[in-house]
Every structure is written in structure tokens, then in C-alpha cells.
Image (spheres, rainbow, N blue to C red):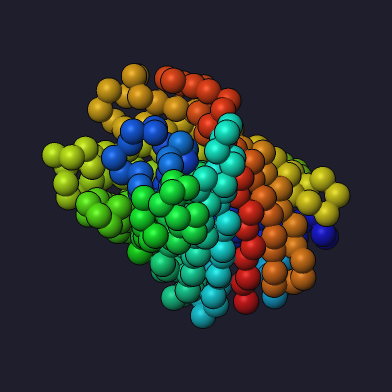
Length: 287
């Protein structure tokens, strides 16, 4: 039961934790608040056959990540762990989502996991290191997002994303998020497209994110990896990057979760390097 519960918990968690450290370092849609190296969507409920318990209640967690009338609140401490630049910068990215109905949730998001689907990276919300340690802006990268359940294991997601506030890089996120169960193994995928709407002459154009994760229980912890692909659509072959995240999550009590992700932001692809890294520590509460 604990393992099943953790599967359900992590599914809800990944739903809302989402644009900077996994992206191309020169990507215009990356918020300038933190030195970028990575780009992040959500997760669905398990099918009835796996039916884990919901945090704070029975039955499978909804694909929208929060039950009707409920709240999901997440906070991520995003730390640059690159070679020679640890904590330069670091910041906090909060997300809050409300369950409008059994099939729809809406919320305000700052994290990579919520805005582009990748576990690693940073740059959204509040940058706390100061301008001398890599913070271009004190506040950046915010999205107003929604998710609509298409089935128990698939949801459409999208909304308005302000990847940068100065200059104003506004755009639309559109994608899907899903989860597949194979015994204790959970596979999650969240392909999404960012479409730049303003300052296109400055490079705020289309960007593709294709995160894929595999998780399974290891004692009281759900552990696994995430990888995928991110790239601007223009000059795709010359710009794509592939990250690799090592992730873990556990529940502290029936409503509180904690976890961490260590990410190699561009382990493969163009200009790949193991020196660009991020550490993300996060907590989440759901009722």
C-alpha cells in the first residue's frame, strides 16, 4: 500500500513541479533571473487497476493533480550546481493550483516542472543570490496554466507563460501529459510546445520540450530518472540538448511530500557538458 500510495503521490507531484536550466544557455525564452542550462508538465492519475490512495483521501489522484475543490501548493529551491559556480545563483519557485472540477485545474506556476515539464533547472519565481551571483532579475518566469483531463491517464495542458518580464517575453504553452503503469514502474511523459508571442525579433520563438521519466519504489522512496529533449524549433539539429535527472520523493505525512532532483542539464546534444548541473529541493502540500 505504501508503494502504491507513493506512486500516486509522485504522479500528483510531478504534475505541478515545471524553464531555464535545461534549456540552451542562449535560449531567449529562458528567464534571465538565473543562469540557464535547462528547460518543464504534469502527471496523470493512475488507471483504476493501480488505484493508489490520494493524499488526504481515498481513490486514485486525478490526472489534473488536485481533486475538485482542493489545493496543491509546491515550493522548489533551485540551486545552480555547475562546476565552479555552486549556488550562483539560487532561488525559490512556488506553484499553487486549484481543482475547479473533477476534470479541470488552474493555477499560478513558476517552477520548471510546471512550465516546461523538466525536473531540473531554475530561473522562475524569486532569485535570492543577488546580481553579483547570477541573478539578472529578482523575479521572473511566471505562468497561468490549466489542465483538462481527457482520460484517467492523459490530460491536455496549456496557458500563458511570461518567460521573461524585462524584456517581456510572453508566449503560449500547449501540450499533453500522461502516465503509464507497468507493475511498480511508472513512466511519465509531458511533450509541450512554447510559442513566442512578443519580442519575436529578439528571439522569443518556438521551443519544443519532450520530458520522459521512469520511476519506481525503493523502500519508502519513489526513485528514478528523467531525460528527454529540448530545443528551439529553428536550427533544431544545431541547438537541441538532452538532460539527465536523478530524482527521489517520499511522503512526510498524508498531505506533505518532499523530494530532490540532481540534473546534468545538457549531458548530450550540441555543446554537451557534464559541468552544467542543478540541484532542486522541493516540498508539496495537497488537501
